Image 1 (cartoon, rainbow, N blue to C red):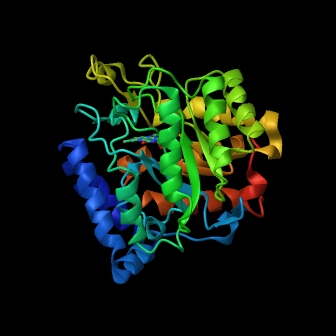
Image 2 (image 1 turned 60 degrees about the vertical axis):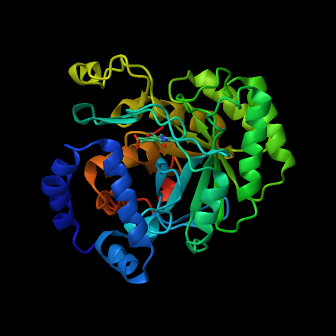
Length: 373
Ligand SMILES: Cc1cc2nc3c(=O)[nH]c(=O)nc-3n(C[C@H](O)[C@H](O)[C@H](O)COP(=O)(O)O)c2cc1C
């Protein structure tokens, strides 16, 4: 974290004002290309680490047998085609998810697929599982030397007309898992049952459909742990039903949660949300924060140590991250905070978390999990 204030100010006063006048998807593609170049070279990786990454033993944890250097990961939706998976460790992330990956390639929903709501600290998202397809992404990741990274793959069903029944969607998830499951560098899987932007009318949030999916996944004998990517706008009881069903199928990792749909969410600046009237899509960032925390808190209270929880939604600084951990998250993920704050925000959050843990007398981050529930 050698030059954090310098990078923060450069991002805030130079890069962000330029980026935020340009088309969000083009900016995103450009930063992904930059990340890919950074990751491809040992010298640029080393420099990135010196400038951005922060380490403190208080942040280390072992979860599902995986050694996490710090609790902050990159959420699904930033690196959906596996381009930047190598560089994220040096940027300072403790783990990073590629995807959501679908078996078939898909060029994405009709644009606009991305939008910015700066006053609401939120992004408009209508990607619909834009993907190069599992085979291409796996080959790309094979070439990156990821064995020392903690990289996971988020799996969803292909958003194409042919995949229009639950049976076909299950077969599609299984095909993608079959491609990745024997690749040693894949340390975990996320099962995305909560993408609100696809064409399927039936849903895996339905208990029967979810149960059928998990039974087929169980038959695969996958060695990696699974996390279920949970919807955001569900009741606590519905979330518990999903958790219970997963536990019955020997899966006990959960990510709370995905995007929000409700445009009456009180966090939105009303003038800003009006600009997205008539457009199909969902929202990240601050509007997701409270609901995600509520689901984390209730699930931790009910299931105690029987579940591993990843907290996602609306993390912009160390206090937000700490709130999620005190609510019951073991580890956390972000994406919108990175886009609004810049790459140095990852090290800043880790450093701030370490300060908060020391201040409150915790010996390690795992001691703080759920203490504010
Ligand atoms: C541009 C964008 C694309 C996303 N795509 C996916 C996706 O493909 N799969 C998924 O599980 N979540 C996806 N998400 C949701 C995020 O992983 C995360 O759950 C959500 O944005 C809340 O975190 P945040 O407030 O830190 O962004 C996406 C989010 C954004 C902003």
